[in-house]
Image (cartoon, rainbow, N blue to C red; front, side, top):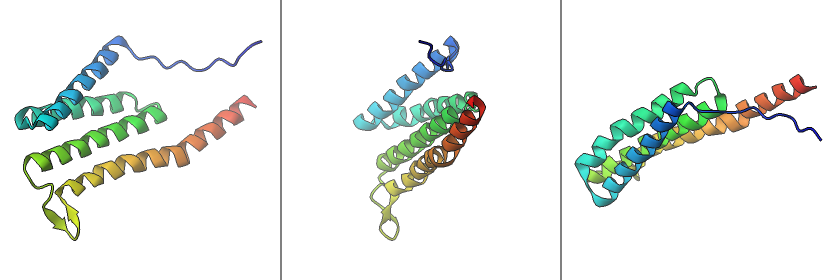
Length: 136
């Protein structure tokens, strides 16, 4: 019984180490937010977001990875904006109609969600269609 060989996705060790450090920075950022350690929390935005962008760039040739990694980068941006809004007490300040400072984080949150929506509604079906044409 022969199964179709599934493509292998492998990550070079140096990339994997960077991804693991990304998790450490992200946790430090969120722990700092929880503990209201403003300086450390804001400082951790830079490496956390930078590594997310590098990961997205490195996976740009694999559409599914790029979409998900871009969504993560926008998630970190939104999360960081929300954290900063709380740190500087403009999270409850009304900026427009019923929207407050923390609602500014909706822009990157929604951007990440729209990237994934596009991937699953447009790109993924296109990839599956191309794959089925090739295997026929």
